[in-house]
Image (tube, rainbow, N blue to C red):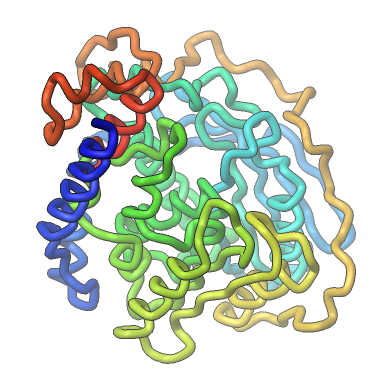
Amino acid sequence: MNLECYEKLGQAVAASLAKQHAPVPVTTEAKQELRRRLFRMMRVKEEWLPEISWQTIASCQFDDVETETLRFRSWDGMYGDATLYLPRERQGKVPAMLFSPGHAHDKGRFQPNYQTMAQLLAAHGTAVLLFDQFGLGDRAHTGHSKAYAPFTCGTTVIGLMILEGIALFNKLASDERIDPERVGIMGHSGGGQNTLFLSVALQERAALAVSSGWACSFEYNARKERRLCPCDLFPGLLHEFEVWHAIGCLYPKPILCCSGMGDPMIARDVVLQLKHRLEAFYAPGQSEVFLWDGDHSWTQPSDFARVADFILHHFGLPTYGDSLCKLPETFFPPTPNANKPPYPADAIDLTQLAANLTGIAPREANSVLDIFSAPYFLTQEEFAALDQETKAFFVQVASFL
């Protein structure tokens, strides 16, 4: 029976992809259509977009970089922390990158690789806003890896993340020290995923984009036989658009997609398929795909230099090239900020935020089995015969259909 179920799963995925008919994002109309599809999938509304306010709670100066530790508020009761890296020597307004970190969990924005990249960019003239996602780093109280209840309110975790990301982009671009015409977006791993969706949401407002550690396809991700994080669940996405449509929404602005040759989560051939699709409509040099030697994360100085130089080059700043032989020491320890002030008494978590925005009371949910229905392509008898782990897998894949 399991074999028959897997055959039906494959047919259902193929049928969903056949209905996609997403436009190539080279016209204003095509991009608007893709943005409508994004908001439909994320189950969020434009009027939910918050306006960020922030204050500096600490500042530090290093050789050629200065940092500001920021406490921000997006919606009422939703607080977060971020680090703004700035070049110390500034003449006029500087370009900037909004950096979405991945699943660094307790480390959050203090994960060493993220710090290193921010330091390298700031040292050569680009400001970087590196922030903690919901539930990660200093924001553990908001919930993340087990945040299934927001789905019961009729929205998604990724939708709330992207709305906050748009608001942070808006706030960064409005900073008096930042050139609003040169603000880009970047991220690694789960942050690379967020960058894809921010590309659809922001489109040509972003000066450039770097999606690292997520250069694959939504179909490939949906069919992974492992439990996906709630922020990786995208209801109905497979008949909406693919990764190349998403990152391609920046067209004709420059984009870089990169991945490790030995990444166990992303197959090299899927990366190359993404490369060919982007090259089909992008001008030479404006769309780049970089495969580093290694697994999921940047490790060698040349990896960091390649990513940083793409950004610096397109911002007209000095690049590193082969001169980066040793990575700098990170400014902060890879742990949450022990000296930060406590969050205000009205601080809420993701579930309460979802309830506040939708007006729908949440119910208890602990897995995908509690938030999505049984696969439509299986009979009740077929589904009932599966063990719990396999049931969860089938429900997870079906949610993308």
